Image (tube, rainbow over the protein chains, first blue to last red):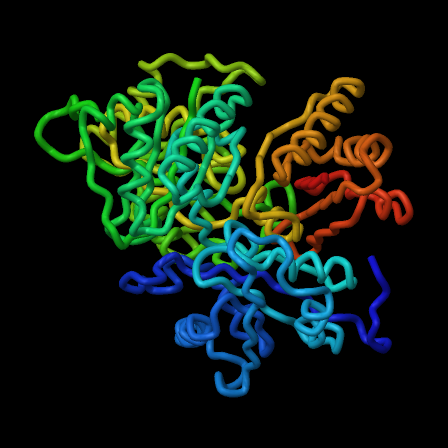
Length: 260
Length: 260
């Protein structure tokens, strides 16, 4: 760990704060899905780095209704993560991350927040966490919902050996090729493969899986995790063929497959 | 989905209930780490299938101190998951799982609980969930702590592409071979590799990583996740060599590595 570039005071901590999974849906009561300890920690923070400032303010209003915020929302500093070019690896340089961590070097705790779920897992934020480690800023992750992991648990597929592989290609031929690659990896490594898609492409992704993967491959789809209308279904590809099911175009879904 | 083998009534739901991560450590307040919605759901259940009956009763006492249990603890039915032979795949037959799900077929909700974290993820339970899907019993996973995912978030390593690979071999030569294989997989698939060890072997595992992996490979260790004394450190193998750090022999740790 690099030495603290600030003066003598110990640095603040970077807290990874999970958000609810109801982004874009009817909000659930936030204390239904986030622990009080997480809400208390969030309510105490005056410095935030977030995926999206608007949804971060909405989160703080919801948290503040359960645990009063330590200071007025207007005086809480909310800065957005640099937007990474989609699929790109470079993005912001080291100085941008250092600047976002400046409050921690001044001794203040900083929160990291996504629009939904746990920051830095299937979501932006890991570059900031890496910068914190490089600069000697302590990092703590707080418990709360995380869609890929809830989907894996609810799938009944192998949860002792799994990969999360993010988004699949949008172009149909590339998507099919990637699905076949994941099916083959799943069989070879005996690993559940977990992936996601933007809601309006869920139906196209399910169609591609059902049309192109092996009949014996097991496929789980979880829609609307933690929401009242949420559901999970796990069946063989043959079963999905025999009993087709429409996916809601607006609910986030998580897919998991296990091949043999 | 198979038809409900019971009479006309709709089946109950199988609820996957996360447990705190303080198993074997000083307990934290349970509502610090579990959402109220999860505790409310747990407190309403009269039928449980669990990894360990003793720790399940302790969990229900803790939950009941926050949300009164719907019925006295003595009248709550708690059955243990069949113990799978370590590393084995077979274990209990289909009839055992069907029998554990009998209350759901009679219309009652059933809870599934581990000693720590989310059931069926890095933990037993997925066979019961698979049986529920096969028998048409709805499955819902409730949010709460999950150690591998909190460790991944806190690592700052790639959280968009990762594998969880469970336990490593205990035998030194086999452990080194597996570590090298994971390092090579990590580089080839551009995936963070996440793995765990029983606490008293944490130091031996860290020693093996530091001695045998590439100096540029990044290694994160998270100890005591969600506990007051918890910490995460991510550094290059070269950094771990230059600044060795002892791991507490009793705290669970999660390891994550990313090679290039």
